[in-house]
Image (cartoon, rainbow, N blue to C red; front, side, top):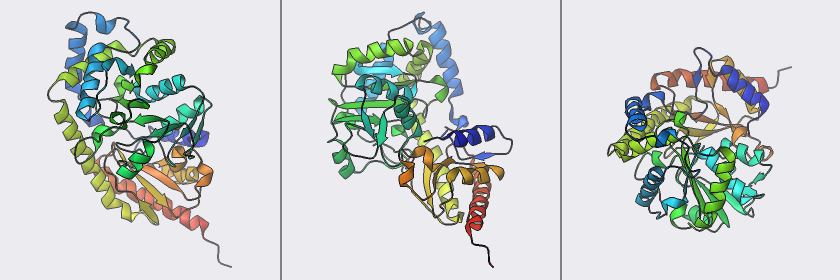
Length: 364
C-alpha cells in the first residue's frame, strides 16, 4: 500500500525536469485519439440532441451500456445491458461493488493493484491473502502488476469463490491473441466485472463500467445515485461515437503492438540491473521486478529519484507487506519513450549498486 513517504517522494518528483519515470502505469500520451475525440465531442454536443449535456439516470446512457454488453458478448459473456452500470473509471466501479456487498473481508493476490487496496482500506475492510475470504478480487485477463493471464488451473480455483470481483482493466491489451474469456461468462450469478476506457482511450474521460448479477441491479442504481448522481453524460456520448466506429478494434490492435514494442525493449535492458529477477509480461503496461536487496523500497526510491529515475515501490502492491522481506518494484514501460529507456535503466542500476554498497560491511 502507498505510504505517506512514498506518496511524498513520487509527487515531489512527478514534474521534475529530466526525470525518466517508470512509475504510474500511465498510457502513452501519443496514443490518445485526439482527432477522433474532437469529432466525437462535436457530435455529442451538436448532433445528438441535448441528452449528453443533461442529467441522466445513474446507471448510464443506454447506447453505451448496449455497446459494452456487445463487446462482452464477443468474449463469451452474454449479459443484459440493464446490468451494465457506467462509472467514473474502474476504481469507482470497485467502490460501488463494495458499497452494495457491505462489510466483508476481501482476498487479494500477494501483489495486486494499489487502487483496489486503497478502496478496500478506505471502507475499513480487510484485504488478505487468505482464501477463506467471502469476496475475491482478481485480474484474470491481464494482471497488474505481473502482466500475466490467469492459468486454467487458477481459473478453476477462482470460480469456486463465493463472490468474485473481476478487474478487466487491461483485458484488451494482451500482446498476442484475442482478449481472454471473462469469469463473468462462466459465473455471472456471482461475478462483479469492472473495466475502464482509461487504458484504451484516455483516462481523462473517467468512464468505466460495473457489470453485476441481476439481483444487485436496484441496489447499485440507488448506491450510484447517492454517490454522485451519474457519470458525466458528455464523456459517455463521446465513447458511444468511438465504440460504434468500425475502426475501434483496429485501434486496439495498434495499441497492442505499440506497448509490446516498448515492453520488448525494456526486457532487453533489464539484465543490466544487478541482482534482480523479473517476469515476462503477456500484456499490460509494466514489468514486475524482485531483487536480492533487503533495503526499504522508499529508501531505494529516494536513491533512484536523486539520479533522475522513478519506479513504483513494491509495498504499494502488498496488502500484507510484512510478509515479504525482499525488495520488489514495478517498472511501467507504457509511457517511457524507447529512446529514454537505456538511460533510465542505467540510472536505476546505479541506484541499486549504491544500495548494495551501503549494505557491505566496512573492512577493519
